[in-house]
Length: 118
Length: 115
Image (cartoon, rainbow over all chains, first blue to last red; front, side):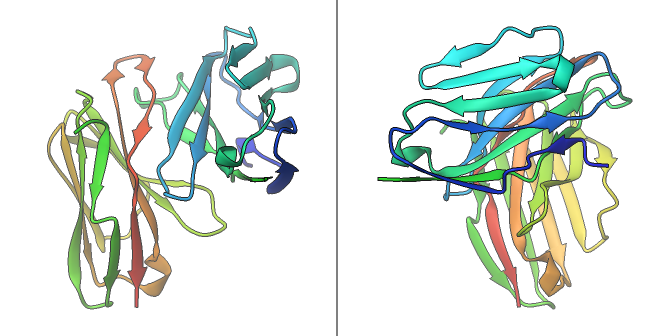
């Protein structure tokens, strides 16, 4: 079973529209971490945010905001007033801190390709 | 130079060639990772090194051979690859402190094509 599901394979919006990328995760651990990464066409995965399972406060950073809801096991990402430069593949990831490895293996979703048209 | 760098950025090789991918991190981290990203597949963790010791080998074929001479450098030696090994190979690094997860930071990747 996939630990992280990003049901939206591709999303297209027009500039200045708001867009929400969905992420649903599955874990039995009580301590875990959730991440969002952005992968532009250049290929590098750019870290955007990390949240731990004990902090359900929503976070806003400029045009980006994240909605963490443990009740629905979701960690959705919203871009407000999208711009062409936001076009990229966005990955949601989960790490279960309670497992054997101290490094906390990252489980990635399959990614959502966001295209913002001018 | 800052962050995580990878060389080469692009590589084309034949199935009988031997080549190496290089990763270097300038973040003071002590853990390094190799990931494989194929088209239409999730990112796959290949290897993990913690303080130069390999702590995870995710059932990777022996034609991929990692090497971590120190905490700042990571290599992936390639030999007798198959066309299905064509992919983007991403390196990442993080701090690793027992019981504490730290964020992984990624390099730009090496796009590999095996003919």
